[in-house]
Length: 569
Image (tube, rainbow, N blue to C red; front, side, top):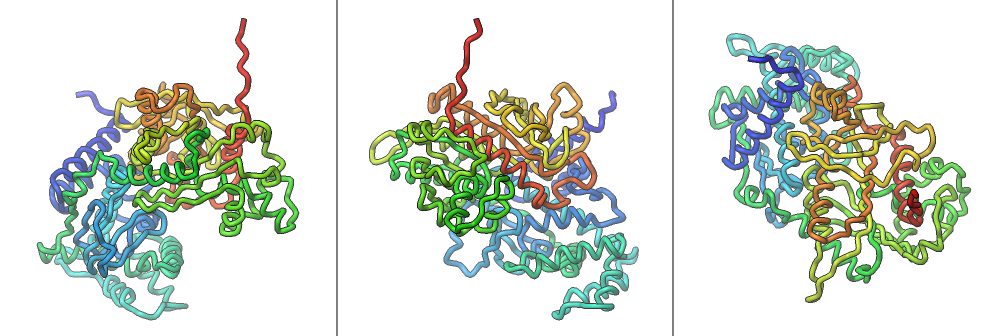
């Protein structure tokens, strides 16, 4: 039998994980310590995601991966033995505490001290995301137990000391804290400094408003204690359930339909059905700040820096002020009520004034006055959710017994992505989207080119891989995509799904064949470089230039006439 390469083994493992997960969703439940759960763990460890670092090393606890996961899961998840994934449930009139994690827009409810319920509104990608994180957490919990238990089943002195520290109500300080962290580092198999850094990281978020986690001492103790309890009582086995209501909505656009209906209703109320519409998938600040930042500074009699990025630095902390100011000149905000977690900004360019634009932004004001485009800025979708919301947005709708088709002229995607060809902060322009784990590949007629951007800024052009999730990435697979005939320059989660919806809308006649598509990504991480994965943290101010450079180019494409194409004789 021919031996598989590392990349081939990893691809098999990723496919196995997805297949098992799909089967368990249909089955309705599974126990991570049971056969199905162990197969999920084996698959995750086999393809060894870069973001989970040393997960496969039984001697040490993976701290950066733990930080990443617990920032995206609700507080107290480490001690739960009953986790339920469901569709929209009416929890509003209950006493259950609603929790939104620090770094993931997902809603969950604490039903009891040992039970948490996730409300799934963003499709299969969200389910895979949760399952990979729970699988990682269970693997690390078992490693904690192995570190603290001897062959006779007893626990070590360090564990008893950790129990005491975890249950203290007063915050540890000075030499007492140093000793507690040293003791914890022995359990973790980590150096004192590594344990200290992780303690401080969790402590910072623990003390923030919202109390995002329970602190490192408590987290590690509860992880180990849950596994100890499982070995003593069969009733304590962690069980993950998928409710019938969740099973029924998979593949249906329940939340996306609500979201699109709310947005189209707002557009119809503003009589935008005959105006050119430009959809921009981006954050909720860059387009707004570019369009109105200079005007706000002028109104406040502040000096407007000639450098665009200096201007952005001056207004980036004035979110409420700039939104209030912009509302006078055509900006309206549509907060999501559909549970899709995608807010929308609508910019009516007909109400904007010349003085609101920074001098570095090129604009043909005669064209703008004539065309009066409407810019719809939608917040980031999550994986396959991108297909659902774009599919629903581009199709006609019925308003007051009238069929309405909005005139969508362009779809613009400014995404965050991992780079395979460069460094963090670089920009990638898609020529195609290759959906990992499937035969779906889409050529992109990208209306963005290197020449549209500032000279000498690092820009990579080529196919983008649309991956299953942030946790389902393997270095060997990604390197294969980059070095093989695919010549992929980056990886992301939504572009291929957006393109699927756009292609479907063209085939169905919902949008014109000449609709402009623009895909540009800035590199938020480099998953094939040690220390540059998403677990390493955000880019901070380093992300300002690529974010606003892409936004500027997209905005200029919308507010200026398309270049004249001369026929070659």
